[in-house]
Amino acid sequence: MKALFLAGGYGTRLRPFTFSKPKPLIDFANEPIILHQIKALHAVGVRTIVLAVNYQPSEMRKFAQEVKKELDIEIIFSFETEPLGTGGPLKLAEEHLKGDEPFFVLNSDVICDFPFAEMLEFHKKNKSEGTILATKVENPSRYGVIVHQENGKIERFVEKPQEFVGDRINAGIYILNPSVLDIIPLKWTSLEREIFPKLAKEEKIYCYHLNGFWMDVGKPGDFILGSTLYLKFISSQIKESKKVKIHGGVLIQGEDIQGTVLVPKQGREAVKIGENCRIGPNVIIGKNVRIGNGCRLKNCTIMDNVVIGQSSYIDNSIIGWGSHIGSWTRIQSHCFLGEDVTVRDECNVNGLTVCPHKGVNQNILETTIIL
Ligand code: GDD
Ligand code: MG
Image (tube, rainbow, N blue to C red):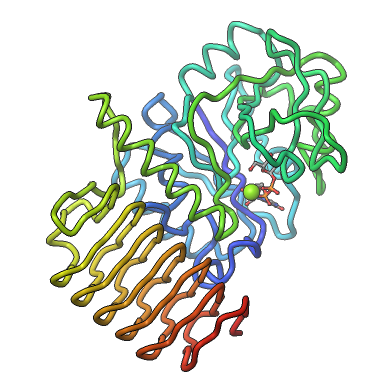
């Protein structure tokens, strides 16, 4: 089977991290977001992947070569010279998607326990043109809302509704028949605003409900929330002795560890955690990270090659690749530090976003962006 990834757009909402890498390649739980998706697709027999891109393709090419080495999978690039939205890229890649079989389409910023096999079975049983993965959320106005019958047949699809329509939303993963390509023009087109409403009107599209966690990690705050949900999911699976593949690392335990803490595959040896630290819950630590003595970390992602001095406190924040955090610092309440950021000793910061290669030299207690 085949899958197309909508991997274009500029990922502006995931800045400052998307200043360094395209959104699909940002490390989520120590592995590029789309690698989680690719591995799950591979497990259900997908062997051809089309990456629909329009931004930093050289980074993506390097990534594709690494994936090809690791998995037996063909990766085709479909490059847009100008953004084609969420629908146009499918038409552009028509020659790769045409055939007798349905194909998967994925937004490249969604994380869940991908139920691809069950979804495919559901799609085949309904003999519909398309199946949308659906989930329930508390704030539906940020998403595409689905109104459906009990059997899953979609009656209405409303993208980012201004008024309450329902709380069942599009989780950003689809199975479509090649015939859907016939109604998509080769120009900027929105699947959500043009194609899905049309298919719903013609009663040709269904939704399959996702049980379990889901998150669009395309914004830093949601990225933190998604990481927590992911770690909770893994630890609950382990507790119930269910099989779970953690691609990007292993959970560790110890006197200094509280709740779920994920480190690289090589285990505790791949990182350095000083004495008298307390780490967790919900912490993800990347490769080659060095944490000084007496640090307190919770609800955060520390990306590869970060160095943290002693006695620092980090909560509810993301620390980008290769950043240097001084000693006795306090970093909390949604701080998003881009790649190679330096925070001076004793700085106390709240709600701070810092662009790559910048420094923080003073206390900053109100939501601020350092450009
Ligand atoms: N190739 C290509 N070209 N990809 C694009 C383009 C483009 O011009 N524009 C956006 N994309 C990709 C993004 O990279 C992302 O993977 C996907 O299309 C969806 O775009 P987002 O910008 O992340 O949309 P959203 O999060 O506001 O809403 C979408 O996702 C929600 C679920 O997370 C919609 O599909 C909603 O209906 C849905 O509920
Ligand atoms: Mg998104």
